[in-house]
Image 1: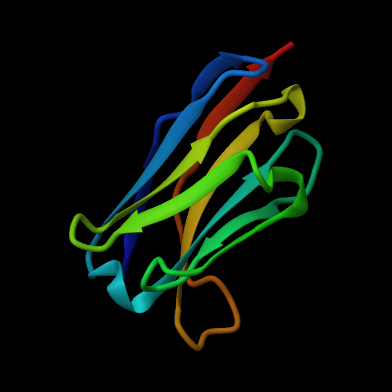
Image 2: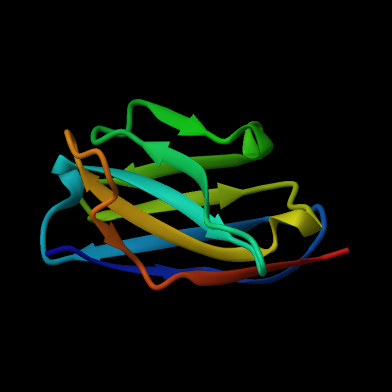
Length: 119
């Protein structure tokens, strides 16, 4: 079992920045692909970013490319999401998730952290 706990959410003005963190316990994250997702009110949860097990490769949804950067520190068993140039439409609950390298689905989820961007 992997327990994931997000932190770093909050209220920020449009154009501002936030850094989300996700700390893991239970197992080392080095054998897991990590991801960030978000869910806005009334909308389905959507993919934001994926970080390969080594951290070498990252993949982003088009709507965050150039603004968000995901990275991981396997030694500290954590990942982070640096969010810059935030827009009101980035307002959502952000979740981190983990999946085994050859898994077709995300196996573990955090409880989420609220990000609110005011205009």
